[in-house]
Image 1 (cartoon, rainbow, N blue to C red):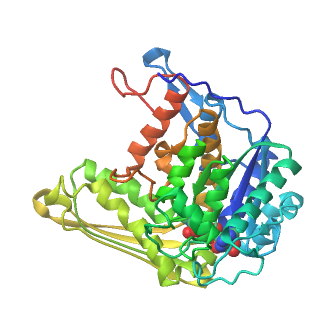
Image 2 (cartoon, rainbow, N blue to C red):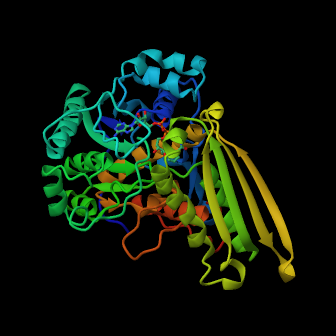
Length: 437
Ligand SMILES: NC(=O)c1ccc[n+]([C@@H]2O[C@H](COP(=O)([O-])OP(=O)(O)OC[C@H]3O[C@@H](n4cnc5c(N)ncnc54)[C@H](O)[C@@H]3O)[C@@H](O)[C@H]2O)c1
């Protein structure tokens, strides 16, 4: 049983977002509409989900938001950075995810959210040119400027706590570089020397963690998945997590693959392709940014299918993922999957999926859940990587040498049992009675 008390959610919670683009503005506008009673938060487990507590006839289903002491939607304040000066209202119009008639209802609130100047480096996002960008002698000074933005926001809005979530563009593919990313000491030295191997997203993550602010990385780039920032999260006792919101095609993959595996159906190949026309699609049109996304998208099947344990079924399956930038589609992505499977005696079959999805509509509720659950983690004195939140990630962060869990259903059990543990309730073992989660 857990013994630490969870501090109450008193006062206001600030959400600061690097990247006020399609996901960021769809999230903010949605929360504003929901809290005015003008819409409902579909897709958000914390707002719409229930959790079963107790066994047998004594069990009851509680709303998660009533069961956990989460911050209320009325207590949220929003701020953020972008490389373009447009307000959240203009950015929402630009992103064209939501219909004007929807975000017009919260126009005043969105207009009031003006981005702070960003920390940006074109070498990391080759398709964009930043115009609303901070300038300072060193990266160390840039980080201090980010901290000032946060502290000023905290003071201005009278906030008791803050959470940061990266909704900025996908940066180029990077691996941990010894001597720069490996220890906090090296990283801080790198900031002072403006080492070009330090990406802007890492500077935001450093600023947040050093201020004791929980951090989540919604994109696939390396960002906070480096030993130096794990060390900082431990040192400051701050929770963090990532990477890459699990939406669209990968969400479908992590729903379907566990089902096929559960029935011991073989897989010969899984071909996935997408067309996408928003700014994210444009950024991913650059091979170096796409590489980051590709690595994130490819990793899930291997972990779910466990080819080492089931070589006859999964050892040789071929997995291919592509994304095509196709402007007419905007945010309304289309993802095709062709899955070549085989059954009894090796007889082949096929599954075709054509998912007409809306990327940011799937991502926005994840952003809401993550900020509320990270704030809860901090009040419960949890720190470092929060792997119980792997449910939300395409590439769940994990300790070196450990394998991440990708199966959505195992992730859900882990998520809900951690919620029970936090509230000193017994985990659901699914034994003894007909149990629901
Ligand atoms: N939409 C989804 O379903 C989904 C799923 C998984 C991951 N993601 C990731 O989330 C991120 C946001 O996606 P989106 O569709 O909102 O993209 P977007 O292009 O609409 O928004 C990204 C915003 O970040 C800004 N930006 C870029 N670099 C910045 C920096 N250094 N500092 C501050 N702002 C910066 C851009 O100007 C842009 O406004 C992307 O990395 C994307 O890959 C999105």
